[in-house]
Length: 149
Image (cartoon, rainbow, N blue to C red):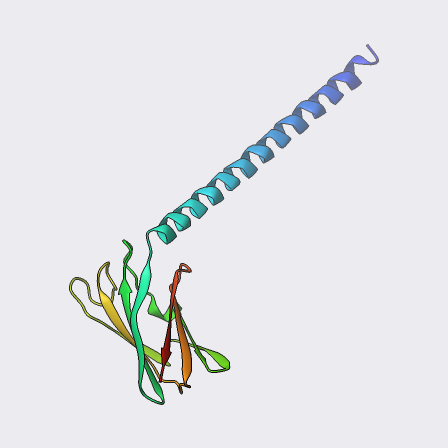
């Protein structure tokens, strides 16, 4: 009898610990499953996104015009989150939204680059003799084009 009460206490503590551990394991598996689903959704969106540069040229020494076409199945917007990088001869520079503008050849929705639509990106930048322009969407899909002045 002297050992029965301590044995019950030890068993109760073991059960309580087991239940707590099981709950923590289930919560961590749930969090991992949610993260996995979010990653799959991002990858699906990326797989459905494709942009191409139809043409790039410098009409003046301080301006670059890039024609971009949405070749994918995803609507593209949030242009302030796009990256525009211009490499001229030996230097490369990133241009934030405002240093470049977009004009979409609209057929469906205003302010959205729908599949099949084209937009013209105009960058205020000094070009060199050998240039490379790179545009990247918010979900990481990019297109590049080499052009000369």
